[in-house]
Image 1 (tube, rainbow, N blue to C red):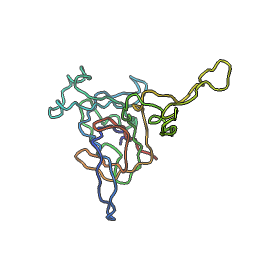
Image 2 (image 1 turned 120 degrees about the vertical axis):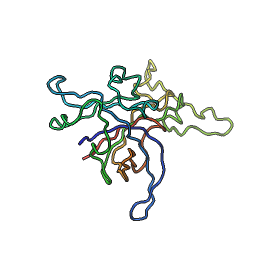
Image 3 (image 1 turned 180 degrees about the horizontal axis):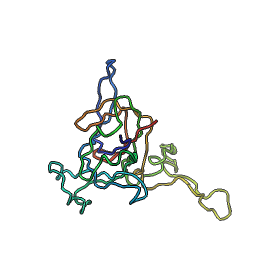
Image 4 (image 1 turned 30 degrees about the vertical axis):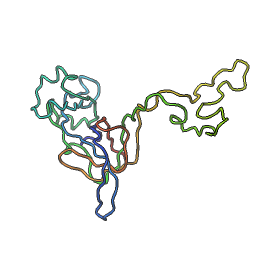
Length: 208
């Protein structure tokens, strides 16, 4: 069984638990994953599987080994997942990997890694949460970062000073999330929000 999988974040919705409680969930599509390379200890020095997420235009076509010769053209994303040395022989190039091959079920705790939404160039108020100065007339300190030099003769800016700049587009991992439901059609329903925008790639790893 594999303990890591990746897929597309489709968005958020809500679902009902067996107790009747409504919980918000993020839907992740983990279908159309194929084994594109098998890493062995004898040849590569470690054991792993390289999985590829087929591009939408090829999703309805049967797997062709020629795809592995031009991976960037046919696969949207490629990533390696660890596998036990005793189970690596069960996989071969071209095999479709489904949720039955992964150790995911209702109630399993996972962590999800993704790239946060890009917000472009932002000031310190939006980027770092600065409170800013008074908004009334006469104030010369509204949304500016303030003094940067510090009490030193050369007025050097301290390393790590929070300043305006590119906001977002960072790798973020959220831990302690729970799988609420599993659809055998290739959908995972994870309780709560996960990083990334719609159709972005996320990696789900089992915890514990």
